[in-house]
Image 1 (tube, one colour):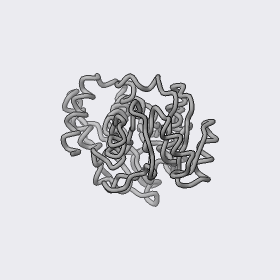
Image 2 (cartoon, helix red, strand yellow):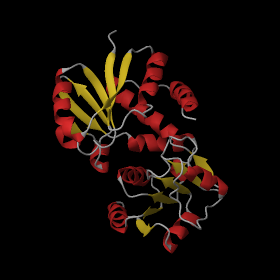
Image 3 (cartoon, one colour):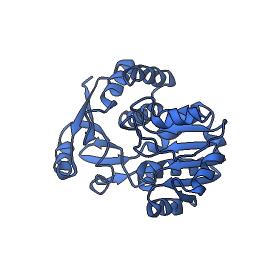
Image 4 (cartoon, rainbow, N blue to C red):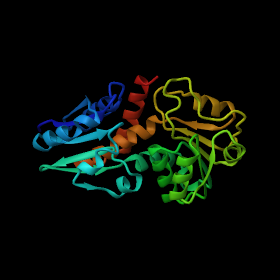
Length: 276
């Protein structure tokens, strides 16, 4: 069997764990896959896609700053890509390019594993960008009750909340502190924490002891958000499980086969040792 070609594309991508994840998937399944990290900016995207249509690529994982820019250059989009306004996986087939978004599936997978996703009554989402949009869409699909969008930009938070019939509040104001204090699920959908120092939680916040604090940031493994949430007595969940679940969804899209739960769990454990 010839090796399939795949890559994570964006800028920067040198930090990406995707090549490691797909190498492990390949080893566990016996399907040969060569997965690369390719630095690609918006100015080169059109030429790169023209070339990809002619070459034997199987798929791309798409990261910033291309997730929105690439949408108008593809032949079709799945429902999740249209709903979130972003693409993070592309499948190439016979000269055509098809766009998908696996954020919703990836976000929910770790919650489902904990038996948590179906029982969310009150959720607070920190952030108002693309990741926050995917989180809101996923929670609405699962029937979450009260949903709050807490953002530093009132305009963006208000707009996102309006799209999902949610409430909103500027971070650090009284309403946001109340939303955090009563939430079952608190999600960090901002980039705060990537530097290992920044925490998006406002001063004076409180969390319920039964609450789950979920950070979409996966590197570092133990973020300031997770440490602060633990300090407040909440349970915590890091972003690595979501990353591996997104990769598993891309594998299914590319090859038409679902990975077993055993393989996904084994790869997550292996990649976690590289992400300390």
